[in-house]
Every structure is written in C-alpha cells, then in structure tokens.
Image (cartoon, rainbow, N blue to C red; front, side):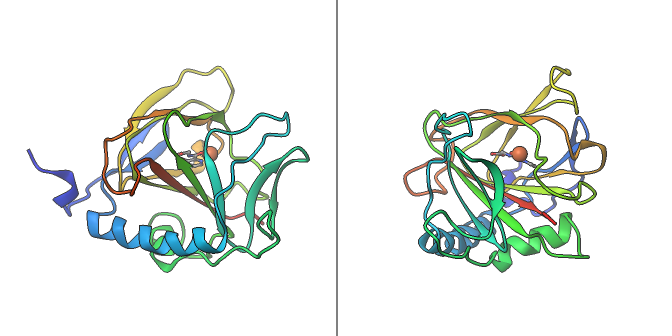
Length: 210
Ligand code: MD6
Ligand code: FE
C-alpha cells in the first residue's frame, strides 16, 4: 500500500455530493510549513471560543486572517475587519494563498481565511456558508491534523447526506451547485495525527466575502 503522505501523485478529486475533495493535496512538509505560518497568525490574532447568537458556546476555537474575519457573538454572525480584541487580522500566509490559487481561483484573492481548531469532542453542526456577498466564488477548505468525519448534504436541510473522513493535507472545495450545500463535522478522531503539538485538528476555510 502506498502511504498517501509520501505519494505526490494527488490524482483526481473525490466527489462527495458535488463537493470535490483533493486527498493528500499537501504533503507532510507542506503541512508543517503551513502550520508554522499559522503560528504567526494565532500569535497576532489569538484563538477565541465563540458564542452563537443564541448564546451557546461553540466547541471549536476560532480566529482568522485576511481583510475580513468571520465572527459570531450575541449580536449575530458576520464578517468584521478586526479581531474581537481590536487588532486588525494578520495577512493570509502565502502557503495558504497558493492552495486557493490552485483550487479556488487565480482571478482574485480571498478576503477571509477562517481558522478553526478542533480538540477533544469539538464538532461543527450542519450549516451553510452564506454570510458572503457572492456565491459564484468557491469556498476552499484545508484540513491539518487529526482525521475529521465530514458530512455533506444538499442545499435544503433534511436532504440525504454523505460522509467522508478528511485527513491531514486534504483540500475540499465547495463550488458551483455545491457552494450552498449543508455540511458539518460530526467528530474528529483524537490521536490520529501527530502534526499538531498537543493534538487536534485545524481547518482553514478561504472565502471571497464581497
Ligand atoms: C471543517 N468546514 O472542515 C468545517 N465550510 O472543519 C466547513 O465548515 C467548510 O469544509 C465551507 C467550505 C468547506 C468547509
Ligand atoms: Fe462551512
């Protein structure tokens, strides 16, 4: 069996209800380089545990890079030009922009790179990404660290769903008809990757907002 982390021949994406997943897009060295870049992002804009408009604490910790960051608190879900602490968001690292250019678009850069950290029992309920102004642009999602059970449905809540384990280095693209598909993370598999010190999983989502 070929160890996917050492296999540079990425091949064709897997299609999951219209969501394309490039398995093993980033090799181990590229994942480590990206993680080093993300340490600088988190140093400038620390991870926070966000609260939904309904007052529930989210189980992931979150920050962002780019012109705009997606935030949530009692006042609602929205894009903001600053971290809750008042600092401007750090720039999106070049290592991350390179993935966007290859699999998202080479016509413009994304406004936002949302950073989610999953540890322990953290999960993400089924949702649509619909706080952006133009759904013609795809959302590109990068997985680093522990495996995550990714669930994708249709554009209506309640449609049948399909699931796939996302592994470190995988890149998923929600574009075209799947741009507004419901999706979420049921759970991570703690200890399945040693990429992150202290374990867990980081997911990056790149979006054009305006
Ligand atoms: C995650 N991903 O993988 C959560 N959103 O942790 C998302 O919410 C997501 O994977 C938009 C596009 C792709 C995604
Ligand atoms: Fe999402």
